[in-house]
Length: 154
Image 1 (tube, helix red, strand yellow):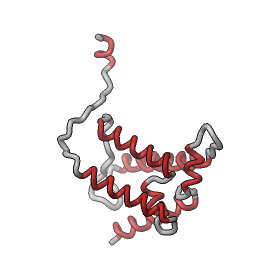
Image 2: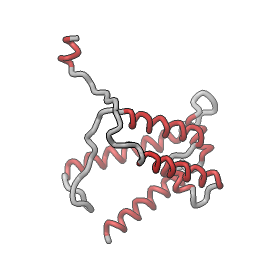
Image 3: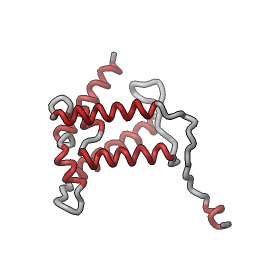
Image 4: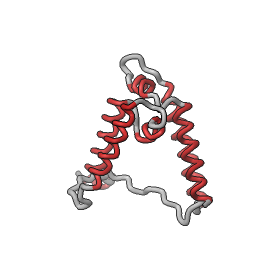
């Protein structure tokens, strides 16, 4: 029960933060992305704050070694880039730039947003379903850093 309550409280706080910061307002997001027009840099502060809180949380979690409400600590360790990651990031960026919403704000805005938000969320869910049809053994292109020794030999 504490896990469910903490997840609910975290989601509620996250949604409230999205509303207060106006990340659920597509016009505000599109103004942030319009760096060559009427740029509104205020969302950079929101993102900077999110990165700072996440970084602090990661440092604390690594020092503790054991999570408060889970059985084990799971921090991603992969650093390689593959076709699926690059393609997904490109689709995310294109969608964000065209619509002014990303998944979290879209789900928050569905409670009070216009019908276009429902269309966006439906397309997002369809994209997630489509992703599940891609075979896990689909050929992947992996980009890895070359070690300094290998780079010197080349």
